[in-house]
Image (cartoon, rainbow, N blue to C red; front, side):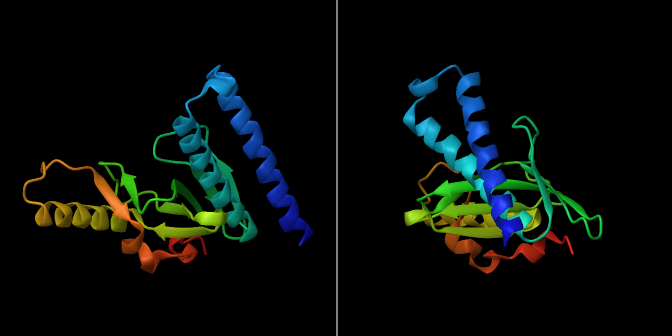
Length: 175
């Protein structure tokens, strides 16, 4: 219990230090646009929440610097040496995530963090190949039922289509 409490405290401390560095590096202080700040805070909160969950499960989780492409967290199982890179997508409200157009289906799994009202959190752990398949199907279905819409649409993935992946930490294949 003390180990878990300490992990949460360290993650919270890292969160606040990161926010401070971002605000200072952009030299905006209190002048950052609210929507941009909200998106930044939601993204960072999601990454720290995932890292916290991984630590509580006995893994070593390390957030990347924000310039590492397609990876937000490096994770290691210290018991067997298995490692994985994870891409985190976070959302507060709404029902769909924007997905990168290019997905390497043999690479990093995604963890979708859905922050609901009163800060209740759901985690959807989805292998990259499933993200590619589900988001492409969702795009095709969207265009099919709206024949007059521009056929060039971004990839999206809705929460309802990820129901089978809620709390599926085993899909990270760290054991």
